[in-house]
Length: 364
Image: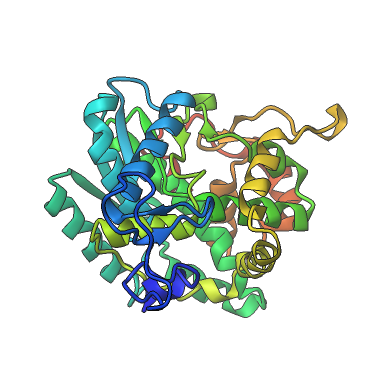
């Protein structure tokens, strides 16, 4: 059901073509019957040719963007969902050409009734593809905090949607720690074009010029000691990611996070769907807009420095992870969100400095 819901406009993908309009011949191999029309170009392809084209486009993205140098040890952020599953499968197929080694890194956020099933999917994928897997947990990294505990802490604040704010920041830090644990030199995530377009829309709607300025490109080079990150699927639409998973017979976890319905991203997603219906190129137009965005010198965010508490890359005195955890530990979960950060910024110079990376997340 999830697959069909994601592909409402690909009629003959599963053999449901109208008998009066038989599927055309594949435009690539000219022998097999086409199984789909590519959402972006309308080109009719069989499943095999589509998958080969998809892999070739990801390879081009990696090579043209110089995202993964030869010999790189790559930590693949694995959630068990469609995007990370497709990303791991494609990179595994391309690994000999790219001369890279892969290590799956999964994050256990501590969400009862949800994450256990997703981690089971990741473990199945790791065993099937014979890829090493490391799981890191919020509870171990962040002084006992899990997302369920964060949700309980924020429940009385009237801002349940802030759960995704906490999770996004902590997940990024957890993935960084997991990648360092396995000796990775680079991190890759499965963000696709739709994800990136939603992020651009969210930043526009919030008026967040700083994030807009940092949102372009295919990743980050690894400033301030952070590991380089990239998004090889950033130019692939969500529909094509799902199509690839279908034709390669990939099994993935497709349930939505229990906290996602309250997230602001959902509003951006609904808006993007309406925009795409009116203008099919809207998704990639937004992605490329972020790449080409230029801010006036007075609007540009300051160059990032180091967190005064843990030493991680930060645009302020405290990195966002330390600030959020500080608020949670004080029993003031909204302290680091919005104007509440001012108090933390004033106190930051009195906080601990030069905390070793292994201890930074539980030092307070």
